[in-house]
Image (cartoon, rainbow, N blue to C red; front, side):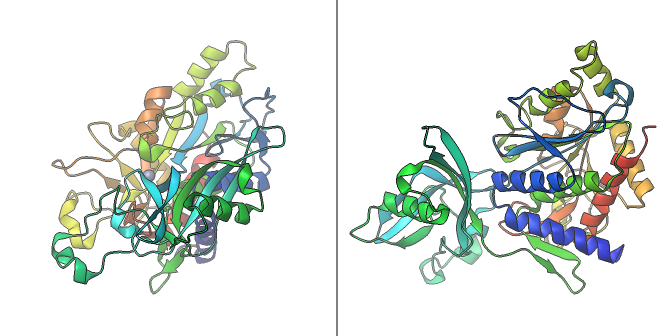
Amino acid sequence: MKRNAKNYRKYAESLLELIDASPTPFHATRKLAALLKAGGFVELQEADAWSLKKGGRYTVTRNDSSLVAFVMGSKPPEQAGFKIIGAHTDSPNLRLKPNPAYEKSGYVQLGVEVYGGVLLTTWTDRDLSLAGRVVLQSKKGEPVSRLLKIDRSLLRIPQLAIHLNREVNEKGLLLNMQTHLPPILQMAETDLSSENVLKDLVARELNCQASGIVSLDLALYDVQASAFAGPNEEFLFAPRLDNLASCHAATLGLLEASNQDDATRVLAFYDHEEVGSETAQGGGSPFLKDALERMVMDSKNPRETLMRAIAQSIFISADMAHAVHPNYADKHEGQHLPLINAGPVIKTNAGQRYATEGVSSAHFELLCRRAGVNVQKFVVRSDMGCGSTIGPITAANLGIRTVDVGNPMLSMHSIREMAGSQDHGDLIQVFKEYFNSEKD
Ligand code: ZN
């Protein structure tokens, strides 16, 4: 953390605080909305009529797990366009099945489903707990949601001892998703049905009646706190850096940018990126487009106004990138080896798994130059498949010029990931520059 050491430390601390408070997209959305609210943003409801003011700052959420925030520009969008940063609130994890609790071999265990591309072995032998959304019945018989985060070691997926799995170091730990992943909750007791064990636990945590609990959206998470690491605190060890780091950098970039801008500035943080985005609140949904449409609703010809605005706008799709791994450097393209703490990465793919093209790439690179931040480039090896992001989906939905970028990291999709503390501060500077700069 050499550059602007004090500020950069503050940025990274604030990121780790967000991550530790946000084991699920529900928590992340609430926490990001709270950061924005502290910066003067007013919460809108999708079901209400909106009356938006010039320079007004607003947030709106969908399913408590996706968020759009925006600052109305001092000029109308058809004159100054939108400046948008998109990211995702979800991370791969293990989620409880609808009837999770069962007894086996004297234990109570919880059935789990795999959400997204989890590095499964990293979830073994960790101190796990439960978090998510609990839906209760109100007095009127309506569903009401409460967030739950049990802050202590509660569950474990124990590895088989090496004595019973002698070839594990040569052949690798192979995990069957149905039979090997259910964590142990407790020893079975004869006087308690396994179903009640979970509901009673949740009811105790939320101080409510177990009979009032209708449904649970609960996931497992690791209770170990995030940390600075390395001799000079140059690394961050934390879960969910992919992609809460990008959500946080975009939010701080907007909060620290000047109050006024000709352009209308927008953040779009989606749930469900890790499972393909095609949901009511995912990147494939009309959530962002609906919000943009409502921003131009007062103009004479809203449809044309939106088209004109989008034609002069840029969407920065921010998602973490692969830093070169020293033990597996041959998995990378030799001319494209992003390093940690060497600046954000522009991601390109001829097959359009990333939406970057020459002009959008140049826009981002010039932003980095103006912010005094180094920029790196990534392309996957030609003989390997490429990951993707919300970039191409949003580009196709809105017809908007898009660039895919993100900070370099290691251990992507592990229960505990690794990134650079300087990179985080640098990306915030670039986003701040984006939201500050006049349109050229
Ligand atoms: Zn991601």
